[in-house]
Image (cartoon, rainbow, N blue to C red; front, side):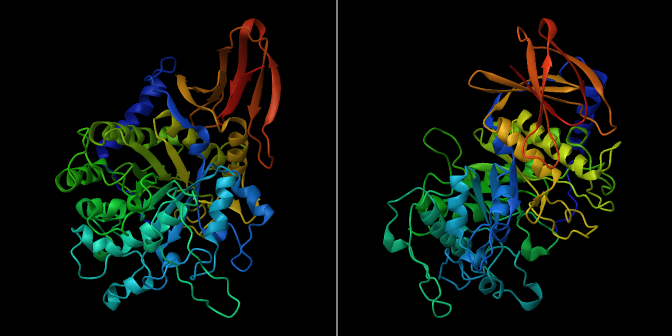
Amino acid sequence: MKPLFLINILIFLLAVSCTNAQKESKNIPVRIFPSNPSLFKNHLGINAFEWDFSDSDNGLIPESRKKVIRSFGGFRHYMDWDKLESEEGKYTFNPVHSGGWNYDMIYQWCKSENIEVLADLKSCPSWLVNTYPKDQRNAENVPAPYGLNRKLPSSYLKQAKVAFQFAARYGHNKAVPRALVSVNTNARWPGDQLNYVRVGLGYVKYIECDNERDKTWKGPQAHQNAEEYAANMSAFYDGHMGKLGKNAGVKTADPSMKVVMGGLSDPDIKYVIKMIEWCKKNRGYKADGSVNLCFDVINYHAYNNDWTGSADPTVGKPPELSRAAALADAFVAMARKHANGTEVWNTESGYDINTKSPQRAIAIGKKPALITQADWMLRSALLYARHGIKRSFFYMLDDVDPNSTTQYGTSGFAVGSKRRPVADYFFQVKKLMGDFHFVKNMKTDPIVDVYGLNGRKIFVMFVPDEQDRRTAFRLNMGTASSVTVYTPVAGADSMRAKIVATPKGILNIMLTETPVFVEKN
């Protein structure tokens, strides 16, 4: 697992000051939040693997598993390079020769369910790892053969080539020259299903270049500084502006596919700014004067806890009482100032349920940790939408180890084909307002957000705390004589719906730390 995150103390202090401001000024919004056009289901993403979908022996997704995955609006696919290219230069997709999974089937099903795929091409295949000395071999090494200059885009040609093949197959460009596309047509055994060339399937819009390339915990052979990673991404993005050949880079195969930078384990805006500076020097500017970036989306990771800047975290914290808002604000402001207003995503955040994990959700009042996990994850999605993040993905579908006390080991949303309450909440909210988007914030304690869709409005309200605090609240509903109040329910497919009268258009409601959703009748 990744280590505990480090972050600039100044950003942490900003988060604390924002929290204090909310507590001291309960009746005045701290700020005006711009409308976010991103649909709320875009903030209900999940991290998962191909084996979370299907048994490789039959290639089918069980109906019980489909029900679990339908909880989410996005699927960030932890996709090992070795699956696509277990032998150098020989590409497989359906089935992949490392494990036998059917990527065509998984991606097609996701598209049919309107679950957006973010394919995260990560880790190094064994044939590349073996170029390193024996004592430095690890699948998370820098994705370039040993000994090459990591500051040169050409060092990452092999990764750029597999990215081209993936984009040619699953992107939207049906005119990719067939001479540039190849698959391994060999059978692994008699009667084995064979791979064959397909192009422009239109299943995938987003691809991510590796994962947490700023990692330091796997040794120097696995860490890239900002300039090295920018060179890597330039190759991955478009074959370093076409200089690496006609079969290298995502955009070379499909100009419409969006390239997402690998999520940063240490959410430091200075790392991204250094990448932008590299682009200015090595990729120049577009005709409109904007920087010719080697990514379409900025991406960071952040797990919310009680980290203070001077000691390791000991427990998870709700998003509103953590650095989550300050980080989101810092990244969005940086993107606006330095990166042509590029979209910002958060693709990893989560809470454990093991009582000894330093990233755990806690029992609050009569609520067990499983319900707190559900509350905090849903509130995290709401926070990211409120603060201008365009997509959010959470860690992760299944536990790494249900008995683990290590951070991130018990962050799962499901156990096999059974949803945990957090997945129940996501399923229900996606069903109720997945196509709505954040319009405005009316109040910050309690939080009152407004979501809209074609003239309809849903008010989302809750207490941003972890003390089992309850607050009586009056909401002016205009001319409405009644409203429906929706409350998430563990173990159900739909929220509990209650019609409440609103005399003179006023809703009187007791709010808790679990969000409720209110719509006029």
